[in-house]
Image 1 (cartoon, rainbow over the protein chains, first blue to last red):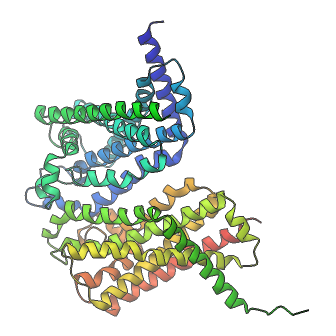
Image 2 (tube, each protein chain N blue to C red):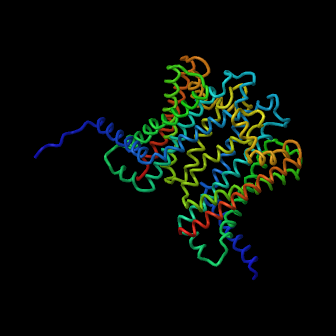
Image 3 (cartoon, chains in turn blue, brown):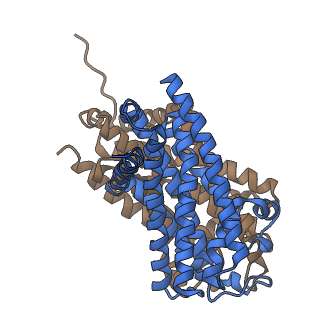
Length: 261
Length: 263
């Protein structure tokens, strides 16, 4: 068997393990689905009048606008959960056993990220289904829905890379879990939940440059108006930027972990 | 041989409750980091919601032009919800580690053990509430007046007791920290399906219906009154009644589980 085929098998096996692990533990899946769903319902019902504000982009409903925000929240929490699961593996010694196995180190991280991507995909499908059930329309149809799903899945993997880097560096599940509030902070200072032009300073200015805003817009545009090449490109570039950051941090953290044991 | 001096039951119970509250306080002093999420989460919600939804006050029907004044009591109550849920998680940990078993074989009545947990959460909820309140004042939220402040902090402390009863009920039922998301999500849903984000008239139909029957709406309105207007008895008593009802229902459920535990 070629080295590439072996690596693919390892990544697939570790990815399947991390997916099964997540779906077996309700405490890992709950934050990814339950919290964003509750917030989506409450924010949609509580701030529905926002669509009447001058400057609000034309939308069918506030739910249609908020779907991208819920997906963003879900993917961020999926990344965080992936990091927690990797840290638990480190704490329990499972990662040490993988380090001593004849498999490339990157496959260990990639396997975990495959699981995180699957969670992102699940979150995207969940919120699309919620939106469609409650009457939100996807303006650009099936193609737009597929684009949104692809962007959310890729973004989950990208954010998971940073979660994995922190897990590898600290080796502590509680430290990675402690980043949960930070996830909310980063999300609140993006345009995930509200149009950036209508936000209050300093959140408005920060949201303008927050990479998550670009991803949120890339996911939202196909739903509320149509596929926009520029928005999609910015979203892809933002995801690639986060992937690059995650790779650099993960590589450094991996070296550190191998050095200190 | 000296005869043992009998301590009145009420005094023994009070001493036990005090000891359990002191244990919770010690936890806070010895592991200060454990309190950070409880303080941070409502603060982040307050800052985030204010930054994101601040423009909502431009809508007709808003009682105030300052969203920070409108949302700060909600964030303080959220802090109480998180603190109460955390009390449930801590109780679940005590169950998992066998600490509760040791308490159960003591001569302390079951309601005393529950009261210690609930009152400790009540006292602890004042920390995030004070922190969020200070941040809100710094950002320009209106001063609620002494009477408004007393009403708000009372509502916060009582809401934490409600949340602690809910958390304790689940902890005693499932006997596992895995129930933590249910404790937190339950309180989050209860507090936010009210007039948390906007006045009743501006809520969407389904949320309006839920907010009308959700007793916590009365608690939110009572806690908010000083921030958006003046404090009146007419706006206060429904909140007190709602809290009494919630405490009676959730307290009974928690106590029933506590009595069943170990039997």
